[in-house]
Length: 260
Image 1 (cartoon, one colour):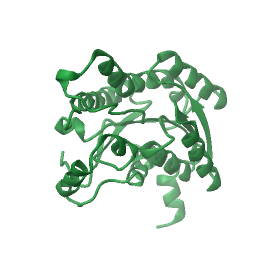
Image 2 (cartoon, one colour; image 1 turned 120 degrees about the horizontal axis):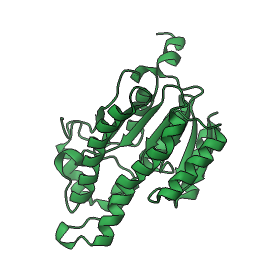
Image 3 (cartoon, helix red, strand yellow; image 1 turned 180 degrees about the vertical axis):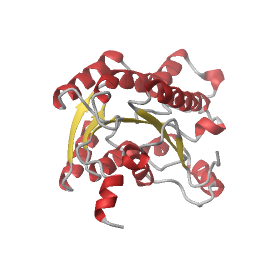
Image 4 (cartoon, one colour; image 1 turned 90 degrees about the horizontal axis):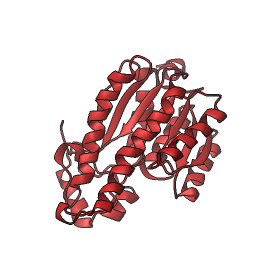
């Protein structure tokens, strides 16, 4: 297989990508993978400026292009301001949006779920994706082979566990929204989602016990937890020519924890 073929099918040279929440975890892995394939990446962050700079610096050290931008994407005005900055940087156009921002926030059974916690979970997982997408659409329509990737979760299938039912519900919403948006934005913009299983990032260091993670490992066909780097290649595949006829799909990356 020639290098020319690989570049034609999986190369992203000249593409401009915004990855939200890209300072760490899956967001960073995806940002680095897109940059390695040739894209220039806007590394978005909210409160993690240090990790975002580390991500951009790591990309630069390997010959890639990246820059950082701050915004609270749970607020529509901040999302609008972020993409106004992106438009200024890239002359009003972009090619890839990865809606990675999201969090469990905290494990809490529904009987103890406060209004404030409900609002926080909804905003970080649903509002942020909608606000970012809405602001990015005019730029994506001026891009080439434009693509959106939403980050979902295996929890959208099984409903979550140990006080994660509301989080799981938001990811179910992302599943449905991905399919609806793919029809709404076709043929100009393709829309897909990546649904990780349990990938070991700071998310699970903060929210999951060793006993829970050991149980997931045993229940996973490949007998291990996911790693951030297990997800970057899927993002490249979906955004490159290789994924040009794929839209409205959920790519399951869970090692056989869940067979859809």
